Amino acid sequence: MSDISNSFQQFIQSAEFPCVGAKSALARDALSVFSVGKIDSPADDVEIHRALHDFSEDLDLQSPVVRSFVVIFDGPDELDEEAFEKALWNRLQSLHNLDVVSGQSWNQAVDHDPDSPHFSLSIGGEPFFVIGLHPHASRPARRFEKPALVFNSHLQFEKLRADGRFDKMKDIIRKRDAALAGSINPMLSDHGDASEARQYSGRAVDPEWKCPFSHKDVA
Image (tube, rainbow, N blue to C red; front, top):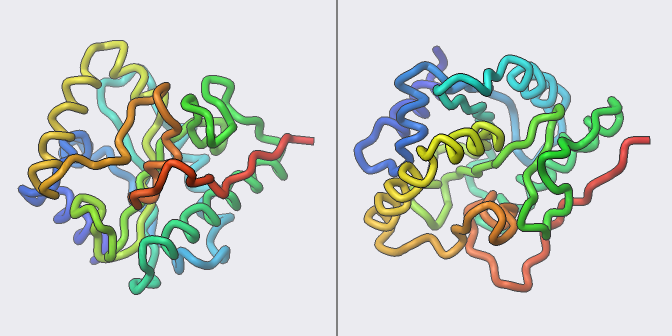
């Protein structure tokens, strides 16, 4: 296992880290870590897209174990929140563009409009909720030593919601996060209430914020 994978495991295992879902996934060996180069460069986008597509194909939506795909970038480490947000959306836009080129349509279970309260990012035909981490995040729970993107299956979340487990887990995570940061995350909202795109980077954005992502139709 690489040093950065070990560091990420320690980050998740720390007593302060609030996401009990990630802790559970780690304990069940359900976190897939993929290490690449710089988050502000498109050099590894094809490899990320291929690995994320392979991860999607292996997802078992009937399993009670929730799996996550983590892309950890080797810097830059000095990005502030706005620069990280720009790099995050550049990578996600590029991954979507690769879908379009390959003829992969958007998953119909979610909206492709990033302003929609029913938006989730679709890559490889799988809808994902994305969590950005980086060294200079204002929220402690998002503050990892390297830039990283965590892809969580939207359909797995929906299954948890149907099972009645999602709301319990969400309440625990939000209480732990508020205790860690000293305040409730102002960006949090439930799917269907506001666009989840506002939560991806971890930066607190104002009501007028416009997501830089642009959906493209498959030819």
